[in-house]
Length: 107
Image (cartoon, rainbow, N blue to C red; front, side):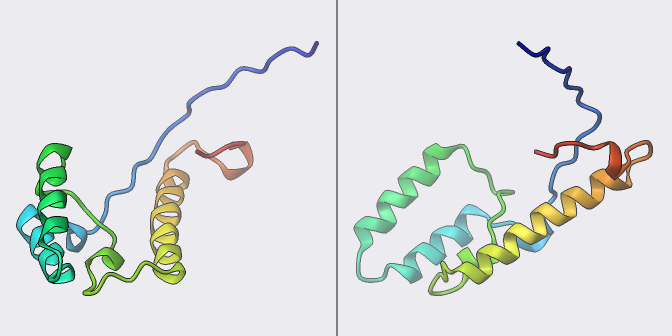
């Protein structure tokens, strides 16, 4: 049996979305109403979920979720993933003492 290696948390970085991604409840509810004009039950259901979710007025959503109608496709999803991952990795690698060669795993 091989000996387990120690794992150390050297540093961390978190994604801070641009202010333009913030969506207050009123804006989100308006988008829901405009996207579901024919089905007010859906809007009411989503309003109740939003009310109980713990999300605040500083909650951020990806821009693709705010298009009217919403555009759930691969390209906006890839853009969002690139923005989040690349900015976090850049922030992490800019910190002093952390070199890419010594970093084995990024989560």
